[in-house]
Amino acid sequence: MYILCTMITLGIESSCDETSVALLRDGRVSASLTHSQAEHAIYGGVVPEVASRAHLERIDGLTKAVMDSCGICPKDIDLIAVTDSPGLAGALLVGVSFALGMHSAHGIPITGVNHLEGHICSLFITPDNVLAPPETGIQTPFIVLLASGGHTAVYKYVSFGNCELLGRTVDDAAGEAFDKVGKLLGFPYPAGRAIETEAAKAASGGRSNIAFPIARFSSSDKRYCFSFSGLKTAVKKFLSESGEDYINDSGNRAAVCAAFQRAVVGSLADNAAAAAAAHGIKTVAIAGGVACNGFLRDELRRRLGAENVICPPPHLCTDNGAMIAMAGQLAGQTGRLRFPVMDPGRGI
Ligand code: KG4
Ligand code: ZN
Image 1: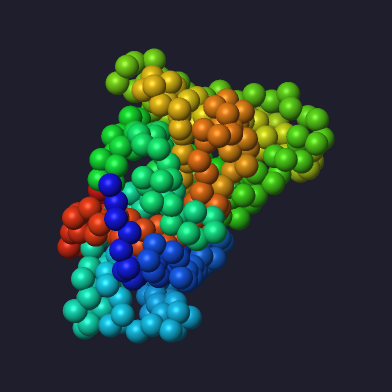
Image 2: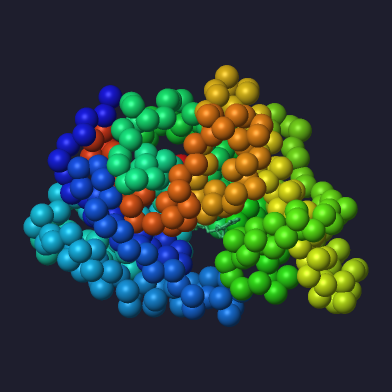
């Protein structure tokens, strides 16, 4: 049982290419600002050194702006929650060092937050920014499909701090596959949204005779695991065999996007639905940047029934400080505060 308390939590996220700071007051998001680093677009992927530098340039200003917009100063903050794992080492270092600076200078309690746990906690923030306490919100246990640019996994969520990993990708993450295929097709990084938009044109145009293979695992220890690197290779081979003229045709490009998206979404939905059925659980929630994908949302709703699928609003699916603040608040309420320890490779 969680108890809502009057507490102001500052959430700081800097694990990859979004600098995001949010204030959660009494369980509501008072303010949230995110700077998405456009600097990486020309490189076709995140450049770690560029990310660290960009975080450094923004984090102070974003934090001030968030506090000013709510009319509060550091002494009003009850808890700082900062992403300390997993992520790019230099990028995490900026957020953790900044948070530790505030902690030391103002004596504000602090907690480290696992970024993946943060994504899952985005589920507890409702679209109208009113906290849905876990006991009145989503019935536990539920299955979470977490699909982002860096991670893809299926979990059984029991309670805060009690989340069982059922399966994960053995190679690329789903978002990474979107970004890599997008690069092959000439879309700027990150390419997930552009591929979805392009694929929608194929749906209206009617060309859908392409089918890409997707890996499935039959062994019991990998039953809910994913693999997307072979899919990316299949798209690459298809494009090189089809030639430049083929892909310069917008109808063909849309058909390739639709076929690729079908394959990824099919794999994500298959594993999430299979895990739910095997565990006798009705509710499936999605989180992470790929959870913005409308085709994924529709596919899960079609298979499981709309009432059984929980989708956070898109701005809470991609990296944001509010989900980190939410995880910090739940850590405080459940006696799980921990001093930040940077660990680029730690999962949950
Ligand atoms: O969660 P997130 O913001 O960052 C990580 O923790 O990685 O996820 C970013 C990923 C990118 O790979 C991006 O291409 C993907 O989410 N993404 C999408 C969509 N919107 C963002 N993938 C598919 N469809 C979308 N609409
Ligand atoms: Zn993320």
